[in-house]
Image: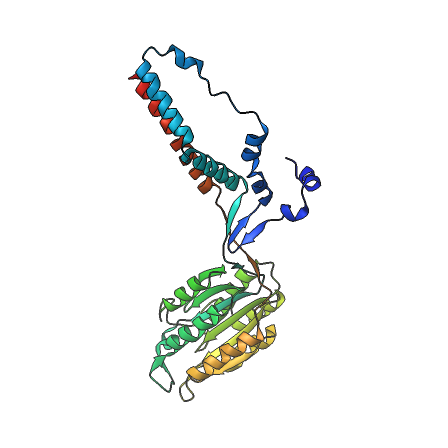
Length: 338
């Protein structure tokens, strides 16, 4: 039946889906057909009970057995109940029942954010911490990992650098994978030196391919750029030309540090970012918390509710009950042939 015709025949309220908790009936108007068999039974003339074919059965005893079983069957209420259940099951299947799942949040169009983490040998040195001794890399994993977890809606990428820079995780919404790859990293994985310029250049190459205008690089290091093919300031100028913003973080104790803070500060200034200095774990946590506020995630999220069709359940019940109704006739036919 055409939807336009239904709108003329039925009230609009009957054409709206009916929601019962997580269960939704897409076509509730189909259930209006439930009394149709009973109406037809009242309106149409009854069928004749005479069976001329029975006169041709040669054995009178067989005839009485068959007739007796038919009369008993007609007097029983079970067939009527089964027919009613079959009809109800068919109508339920035709009404398009659906199960509506819980809302699932979709990734939104946030920032393209790349993290560049120094894995040079010096990142294995201890960083001041009030509770226990931790290395710079251990502290970075804990703090940056929590930062990654909070960036719902952003695409996150991970660059690890030492003698050279490598893309450990391309831009993705899968924050858990990026965090796992960061946790699995270790000092010396990319070499013992520090190629800051190459890390920035690689980030520019990756972020420059995206159409997103909000592109951010957060670079963390504890040393001087002493490897690679490009100087950090030159790489920063290239990043600025692509509209990228770079935040640099220098990690190291107050007394022992080989940081080139002037270079890191210059890199941040060229791109419109900021330079931060972390002398201990607490300051590193504060820096990432500040970065979370400086580059907030867009909170206007979208969501959808998954839907599963359930029509096959009542349809299967109808077929099963119909089989039960047909079983006596099948058994009777087999008995006659025997």
